[in-house]
Image (tube, rainbow, N blue to C red; front, top):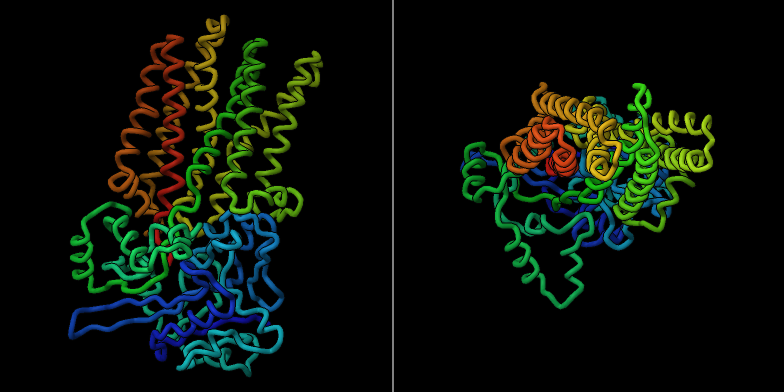
Amino acid sequence: MKYGFVIDNRKCIGCHACTVACKSEHDVPLGVNRTWVKQIEKGQFPDSQRVFSVMRCNQCTDAPCVEICPTQALFTRDDGIVDFNNDRCIGCKSCMQACPYDALYIDPETKTAAKCNYCAHRVDIGLEPACVNVCPEHAIISGDMEDPNTEISQLLSREQVTVRKPEKGTKPNVFYINGDAASLNPNDTEPSQEYMWNSQSAGVGHYARYAENLKSDKTLVNLVADLSAKEASFGGLGQEQPRKSIEVLMEQSGHKRVYDSPDKGVLWGWEVNSYVLTKAISAGAILLPLMRFLMGGEVNDTTAWVSIIAALVFLGFTGILLVMDLDQPKRFAYVILRPHWKSWLVKGAYIITVFGGLVSLLGLAKYFHWQQIEVGALMLSGVFAVLVAIYTAFLFAQAKGRDFWQSPSLVFHMLIHSVMAGTALFGISAIFDSSYSNWGGFLQNVMVISILINLLIVLVELTITHPTIDSKMVVKMITTGRYKRLFWIGTVLLGNMLPLGLALTGEPTMLAVAGVFVVMGIYITEKIWVEAPQRIPLS
């Protein structure tokens, strides 16, 4: 048994009855939707048409949201329905990053993820989903696709159907008859004028901040006016451009989006950017002394204690930031206590925990002069420092909705940032260490080499042939669009070229200053790499 939907675009009249029925059936709050109808206008009068497409969860056979969910709050039932359990959700938003179809949202009232679950409670008692019952044209057909006697099975056998983003390999189970590429592909259109939902694009979705204002004395008119004032412009590829340029673009293409779901905005914000930096510093604090030790150099007591203390302190900051980013922070322990082992969020949590324990053991061995244990703890801490540095790359790779994060170079990106962060930490602390003459040359060499490698990795990430339009749009956004100043000035100049020049002087003070700029550059780079892909529309 496998349930699915067929959306017959030959019949859909865009009445939004399915949206209303879904909201009523599940008490869906304002500003978010489990089902919505996207409307596209094509051509120019009189040769024009309006295309309607019902959008929702695709009930994927290989659902990436299920794989990435750290607590099994999302799961696939035996009948193929992808359902969710609010009581297990920690509000990490990883499922929203993994879904290529923009089907999930954070409920502003429960602060947990939600989506279309095929009205599983109705299916269990022999009823059809609410949207199917209410559709006046019978444009939504549901049922068991594996039963040859069902209408949906017969439609699939005789009609030409399309699905959204088949290249993602999710095996979606929502099929469209007469599916229009301009509607199903979010990159084919841009919002070209103000209408109620796109006027909310600055504030709905994640916390539905502005939608919650409806509970106050503000009228809907004032609310929309306030939001429209905040939305000064819409920009292709994330750039801020005058509205006229977009209207001209739409006139030239003949396609424009006139009704759609609200933009959820940047889901992983400054907390994630910061935690990537703090864990890089924590890992680098162990990696640098280990590298020195393996190369036969001396690691004095002062350096060893700076390494241990800094690793634990910044690991603590990492944990705090991770919890802060959750919409249900009180449930953070669920990641450890109710783990879903396919999720790299769970693997990362255990890696961080083990790393913290090994560094603590290293500190105890150092304090009590357990030399054999100290060496073993240092080696194992180094192994887990590498894992701490790179596991986020695998987590991002599970976020299949964001094509730019699928690059295999992201592993090396994360690892070299940890080495750079380690050189920055010890470069700053070295000016207070009397043994700098023995340690400084090593730090200088590692900083120079790691910066050069980092520049090479960034060059590769931005210049390799990207297989998807989404990835190309992100590259353009970084190099010539919304983030161009931040990238060229913050990442390239201040974060790499300037510290490279300062490090080459070999002066302790200059190395310390270079370390400050390296840390700034890492944060700016991670901000761009985390935020930019999230600005690409998924639906």
